[in-house]
Amino acid sequence: MRSPINGVIGDLDTVKIGDYIKAGEIITGIVDNSTLWTLMEVPASQGSQVKVGQAVRLASQSTPPVTGEGTITFVSPYYAIAQSGNPPNTLKVKAVFPNLTGQFNKSQ
Image 1: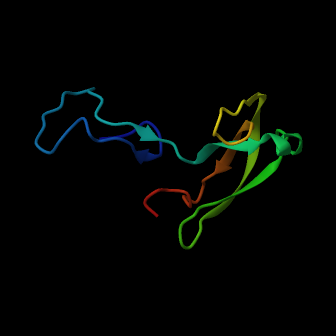
Image 2: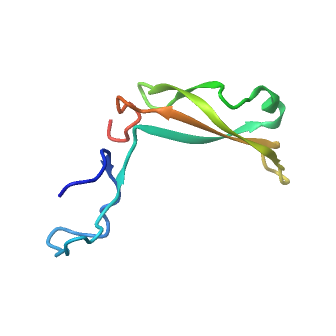
């Protein structure tokens, strides 16, 4: 089988060993993970410090940690309002991270 793009295999739960498949049948997805993104919640008190185009650093909680540099691509124009017993108001921020060497791949 050939994929039309480079990437990693996604979900394989739709087929099992021994299943018959037809030509053209979709059995999985291919994920182009050369660029990844994350959504972050920033406390409202720090919202004025966050700007589109700003550099950000990502660090995993694994040992050893995996780190990477990215860029903020979206800052929500609205704050999420805290409910009783929840954290303070937050601002949703999206950042993009190049993954050209595969350092953020789950299998590594």
